Image (cartoon, rainbow, N blue to C red; front, top):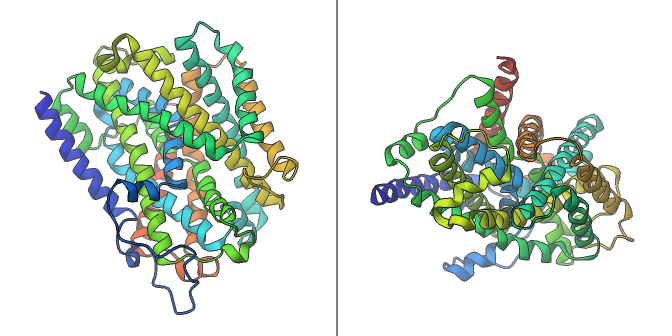
Length: 468
């Protein structure tokens, strides 16, 4: 059975590789952007050298990889666990579909930041009416606050798995610790440390093998899409889309590309404007690596929970302890500890991304000074927004809402918010007045609008079947 499953996994990996190639890179620049004219901006980076090997790949890791790692936040983990436990292998196919879509969207957002020298909110403010920007930013702020609160609760629940401390006692210290890290520490340092904790989620790959799933059922669930027009299945589908193609990642990706330039000494918008082929090629690799990691983790969480919890008849996950049992085939009695490490790592990585992306958007909307590398006294309103989002999210944990339920429904909320935002992302990235010669090429345009249509259809189907 293991040999059969290995063969199946080989086919799946080949499929993911093909999906990656269909996304944004590494493919010839002419396929993902239009050819620049002679007046195009000069590259802001060193000449791209076509190298291979681990050191070269590690050198490409940047905002895209951190974005991918933070995409597997506690909300994502809970969503994938619920999907696997509730419907078995029936949602595995979403991994093949979401990868090229999420990679394309994140590359577009990265390109917007690199070409314009502004974050996404700054671009919308400059080129579109305020009635477009204000509702989008306010909706983002609300969704991110709920998501951050759910993730804080998940961190507390994860610590409770390995230490006999009530989660409610942990909520306030965790929130304060995260704020202190953002205010007086370095997010880059936090990201460098905690992104490695997310590697504990790779244990789901081993758990999937040792759970001895039926290879035929796995292959069927992966390659043959299953759609059920009932509210429970559609809510899971929208949650999967919402947690993989999340609105906060759109704003975060563009803002972090700007932060990279600011850190390199490009303090003005004029100095940051423009992006060459080599720079965009690097960004495409970075985004693809991050999204590939995120997508593989998603796939194997669904597979592991389907092969363990669903098979055992435990289709209704009510706690972090329930979700942790999917790791039992590989970790045994240490399953809860391994799960807790992954949940804490992804949570501490994701909460600053959530509150930070909302604060970036609000700061650019109202013209505040911003930046996680700025000291709080130099960007007070930027940091005040982070504090408010974190503290309001913290308070949400003192309601009587089940943590796993809260994590799942924040993913659904993101799935409903993402479609209209994607429309503006596509309009911005296809507008020559905004992007000059770096408007989307044919492949990215098709994939970007396909993503938008898929998100809209899923959201509409959920609304129409909600009371069924």
